[in-house]
Structures are given as C-alpha cells and as structure tokens.
Length: 199
Image 1 (cartoon, helix red, strand yellow):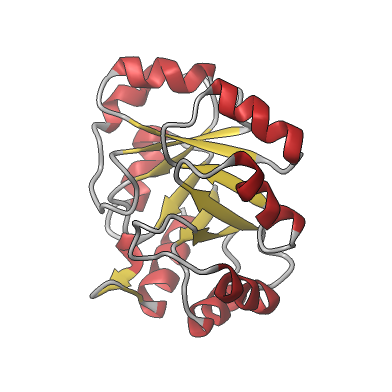
Image 2: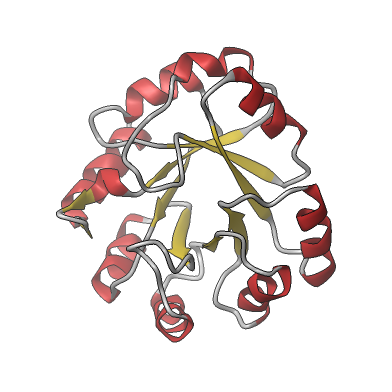
C-alpha cells in the first residue's frame, strides 16, 4: 500500500517524513490553498527531503509549461492535476515533460468514475472535492472501478484500515487527517503510517 502525505510546508514536517519514509510527499502550488508553497520555499524543502521520497507537485489549472518547469528545476518528481484539466491539457503537458502525471477526480456519481477510468494520466486520484477538505465520498461506488488509484478525502488514522478493506486502492493520499489546527502533526503522521503498514 503506497502512502502519500500531502500539503507539507515546514522543515520539521520534512524531517518527520524522512524518518517515517512514506512513499510520496506532496507540495501544493495552488495559490487558493492554505497549503500553498512559493517556489523558493519548495526548493528549500526539496533539498532537505530524502531522495528516497519522490515529491509530487499539486497544481490547479496551471499552464502546462509552468507545471513542467517545476520538474525541470528539480523541485518535484511528479505532477498532480487538481483542476479542470482535460485530455488536451494532458497531451500538451506531455510535450513539456515525461514526469509521471496524476489526475484527480471529484467523485459524486458513477459517471465521475467512468471519466477517471478513461484518463490517460499515469495514475488517477479519487477525492470528494477540491482536495484537502477532510471529507470522504461514498466508497461503495468503487466496487467495480477498473484501474489502480490513489484514494483521498477524509482519511485519518481512525479509518485508513477501513478504507483499505473497502476500497482496495493502490495508495492512500492523506492531508488534513494528519493535521492539528491546520498544521501537520508528527504524531498523527506516525500513527497513520504505522496503522497502514501494520495491516
């Protein structure tokens, strides 16, 4: 089970991840998010981050060449799209970078899942909304979903085992569920990771 901890902003959070070794670290580059990182800040965090933990950059309707520049400059290793990006956008992005691409889909109905199944992205992420909301969607909708996926939305130490059992995802993407008062909590991160890995 892959583990992605998203929305990192502080040096101490990176050091926590270096110790616990999740599979991915997420940096948010969407200005409307409270977890938004400026490029210089992200570059400094990437320098501290263990090379064994790939950094994923989260973008919302950014220009393809702008997202690709973060890969070229060594700030991130993969791109996650969390806006209204379509197949034409993905095709354009591929001209600028060969980095792995994760496309997020908000799930409300089975029709949303059918769209996700058809995505040409390397991996899809299934969420309940715009990301980082702390809310989950109806996991029962995933019964017949036909491709590997990252599960997000409302995940925390209290429900990650249930999520793994019901949804059988490729990985779990956790953000607000490991925060206290909007700040990443090392104890919550450690508890969450240990519960996932001890299944």
